[in-house]
Image: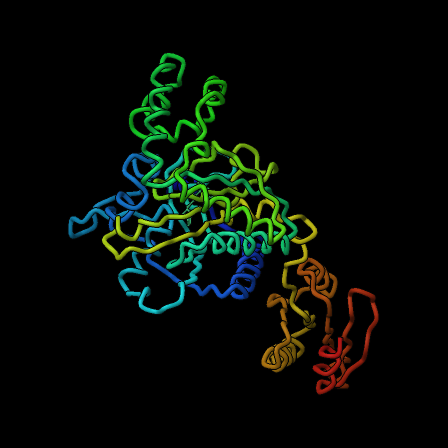
Length: 420
Ligand code: HAM
């Protein structure tokens, strides 16, 4: 028979193996706890949505919609897309289920995989995970400061250092005039712009500000700043937003060239970045998106939110935190011979029902080889069952952390382990 080639994951996609998954679960659990304290409740939306949702929501001229979506026709001929982000889905759900009926603002969070067919780069995946939060139904700038405080609290609890960058991208009233001014300036230096920026000048001029090409940087530095062109309402909103950040003792940097890769933002836009991430330095991105609900056919609704890249967050976990999250079984049962094996199965069954984590090696093997496995599993206690132990019905339980050991009857084992 010919040897088949081994099938592996697609480019930009990966398996998360148990060691890694435990770190992820730790981060997810901390996020649920912190977000819960701020009154956020989880929402789960489908991974597959109508392509139209993202085309309208994120914007047809964006890189995400133009180049990066996993889009295909389903069996009924409908164009469907694996979600590249979840804000459009959450706003759709908010409108679809009339969640705006309650008087209170809706505070929702989500967690799950997103899909973007991006160029491969460190920290960039084609299936990646986000933890995100959205507040719907309020245009108060304090909502923005509070959501940012929440995500910074989570990062602090995880011992991850990062910087907050903020900007205002204006609104439907003040932005068009600014974009036109920008376009005029860009046309005058067209010859010196990179290929992408020449295209962006006509299609989506704001995105030029985000260009990373070296030769464009001196030109970008001379472009007008949107913060100088804000209308009165946007200026006031931005002032208040900064006031609430300051009241919460949150440090920030105003970066007038910060623009985001999705078209739905108005007024506040922000990112949380970490130098340790390299070129793909954004850990969190978000902002205000009043008007998105109407674009999706829903009622007028204010919205603000963010999403954090979970893949990147896990990369930033300090080793001290990361190595402490592995849950070890409480007890490893070493057994010598068939009768001892049966006893080990029985004791494990009883102890597990009482909430004690137990593991044992089915193949048996020598005392030495079983102890080696126990060490590798990082267990705290080992219980040894040999002929003598079976005969006396008393068992040695050894604490591997300090090598102390106790000789116990079966009914004493549970109490001993619980008392540790
Ligand atoms: P975004 O900036 O496109 O915003 O993504 C947010 C975060 O997801 C990024 O800062 C990054 O950490 C992570 N991320 C994005 N693409 C990748 C990738 N290819 N590989 C790994 N991580 C990635 C949004 O998605 C908006 N929906 C955020 C938002 C929520 N705005 C308002 N509400």
